[in-house]
Length: 80
Image 1 (cartoon, rainbow, N blue to C red):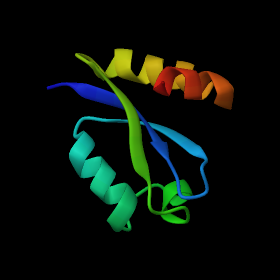
Image 2 (cartoon, rainbow, N blue to C red):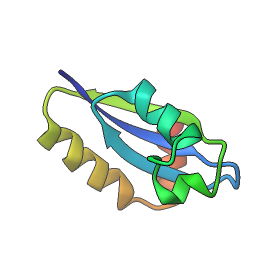
Image 3 (cartoon, rainbow, N blue to C red):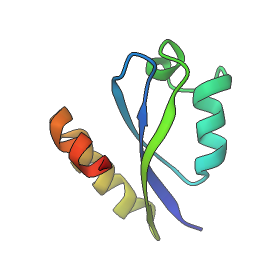
């Protein structure tokens, strides 16, 4: 199994960072399901802008926390 850290762009142009073990399913949830994060539910639709894969959940969570700590400009630079 692998884990993905991802960045979504919401309809209001804000960015959302998350982590999952099934990126396609999680993206569908963010856009269509009541199971999507509250932040993205009220900012639909969302678009996948970036993702990275990891072999362990611990490494993925560490990277997610790192990216979440960044300023918007740094996240946009990563997306490029």
